[in-house]
Amino acid sequence: MNVRRAQKDDLPFIKQLTLETVDQGISAGRDISNETVRQVAAERMGDLDIMLNRKRDYAILVAHDGERRVGFLVLEFRNVEETTGEKQTLLYNMAVSPDYLGKRVDRILVAEAARLSHRRGYKFMTARVTASNERALLAALRQGFEIERYQITMACGPDGPQPLPGRSKEERAHDISRLIRQRKMRKSP
Image (cartoon, rainbow, N blue to C red; front, side, top):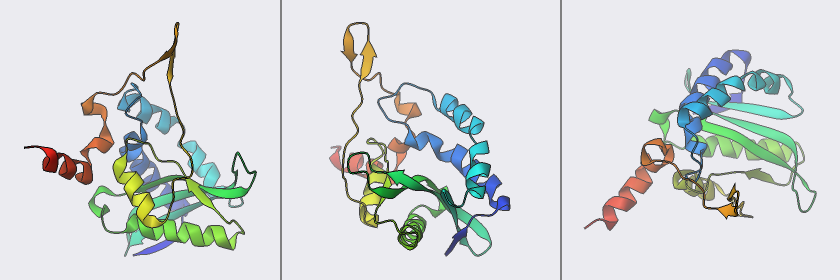
């Protein structure tokens, strides 16, 4: 398996895989439908064309197994850590073809992004993972990421703070991950 910079003819693959996996990034506390999120993502697909051409600001990497594209990673340069003011890169988006999950595609992409960040003079690379997406969080920790801060969210109502509305089980894409299913099976009598 190899990684290379994306080219214009990779964009249909990246856009399709984005639409297939975008629901995995939705927090379990949000009550927006997967279809609405996919519509918003589809409307933003033009941003990928811009990112591909702005090489000073972004790198789009594509993993391929022979001639087959199997994953991608979008890396944003010039990100700034909000507390320290340090420049860092941001892993903006990453997805792996479902039939290549567990085959280290994510590790290969992240390792290349870290090397590229270093070559460009960045000391740190950061990413955001939805708290309820345990599979992505565990994978990120295995790849070398460390938890540095938490983002907290509340719903707001006429009387002030409200609990998050939550998503139905059917809408929770990341709850179907293999790790979570196995953990639930071990706990059941």
